[in-house]
Image (cartoon, rainbow, N blue to C red; front, top):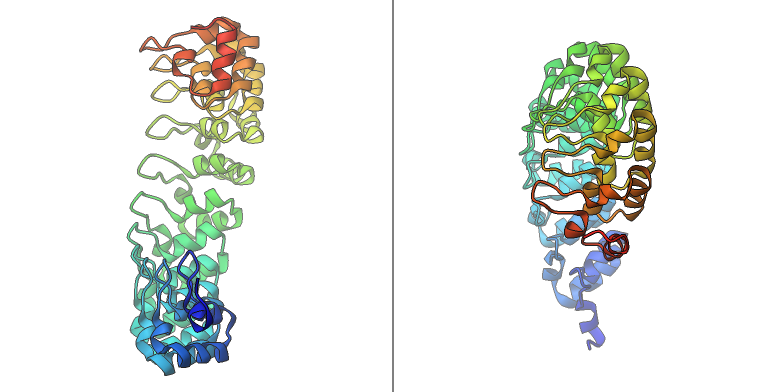
Amino acid sequence: MAYGEELLREKTEDGTTCAQLASVGGHVEMLQYLAETFGKELLREKDNDGWTCAHFASQEGQLEMLQYLAETYGKELLREKDNDGWTCAQLASQEGHLEMLRYVAETCGEELLRVKTEDGTTCAHLASKKGQLEMLRYVAETCGEELLREKTNGGTTCAHFASQEGHLEILQYLAETSGEELLGEKTEDGWTCAHFASQGGHVEMLQYLAETCGEEVLREKTNDGKRCAHFASVGGQLEVLRYLAATCGEEVLREKTNDGWTCAHAASQEGQLEMLRYLAETCGEEVLREKTNDCWTCAHFASNVGQLEVLRYLASTCGEELLREKTKAGWTCAHAANENGHLEVLRYLAETCGEEVLREKDQDGKTCLTLARNSDVKEYLTSLGVD
């Protein structure tokens, strides 16, 4: 056990020191005492994530603390990167600490504002994601507008980040500063600003994108064939789906991904019952019977994730025969429910379709009991004599 001054050298389980905690709270006198007692090398110590006192001070906007650290240890401390390549500048940008960022740029040089993290994220990306417009303006004025066009390793731009979080003012600024073509850029996976906005439920953002880039941006596909409507369905973004249908036509709700997924499949898997009702009312009940390339139906997806209310709705709308459909691998809804141990779904299927559905074999000759991993499911199936 440490006693006396040695107690002040102790670290927490995640490697945090007393000096780092003092930096978080902006306690300069405390840090001065620690540096005088143990030497200024203490100020450069890193926690398990590679954070120094300067990282903590930057995140919390403790400008006086950062100034003290630079004066005491040297400005190279402000250039230190954590395990993920984050600098003080990126932390300040993310939290909107503009005066902190100005100080870092003046002390270490503007090039620090251009530094990228391990995944290629810049100060401009972080400011865009957090909706820090004043911060973004400063970075562009200081480093040049080309910084606003930078991409992460995955091809994500400032415009993508802004769209994802619904920061319309940021997106408008980016378009005015860097040109509207920035709004049409795609990530490595083929995502556009419209895809990000759809996933987040940002209707106003989508309206702006359609007005600025044309309605065709709402019909774009990702590399795996997902459209804005698919993203909206996954997230339960009903207003987005209504807008897309009104703008692009109802046929956009029937589109399939490369794997044959429809909006109805996505809504079923995520338990979005209201979304599913809207799709059936708009496109007709046949959309609920569609199959993926592997012949999975909405009922299979609902069963697999335990969405009992969705399953009840599908049965009442499309008929019980939908619950008996098989995938290419020979799986029934019972197999799908069994995979993740959804006992209540299995009970419902047995009550609705008869216990024989629990005895069905897949293409490999396996029954629900053969595949069962959940002890309660095994007990239930055994009690019915399923082998």
